[in-house]
Image 1 (cartoon, rainbow, N blue to C red):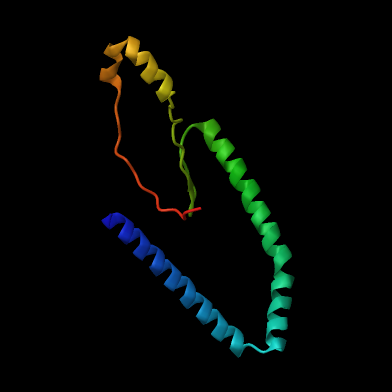
Image 2 (cartoon, rainbow, N blue to C red; image 1 turned 180 degrees about the vertical axis):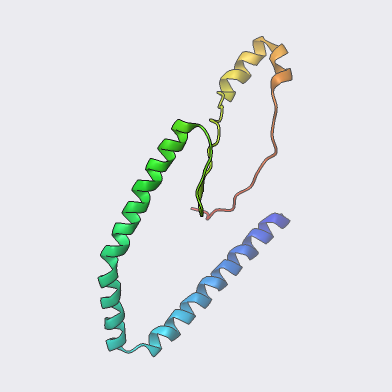
Length: 124
């Protein structure tokens, strides 16, 4: 029950954070005249194609780098970035193996259970 109270408090803090951001933006918007807002919008519009082109180039080059590194099978380091290669992870059908283990209990010795983890998400 204490965890539920903490989760509710965390949600309250996030709501306070959102409210504070809204109030800040309202004050900023109150300072900006319609003319300045129009000028800002024009600047944003002017730069949008450039950002879009760079984003596309970054995406395409990132995909190409990843494919090359997978082919090489090793990490590649640049001056500022590195592409870290990781070996493929192995996945097993746990439900199927647990069922098979009923008939073959000697397999139990090979079963390893890791630590649980927690991620905090919004309730839908």
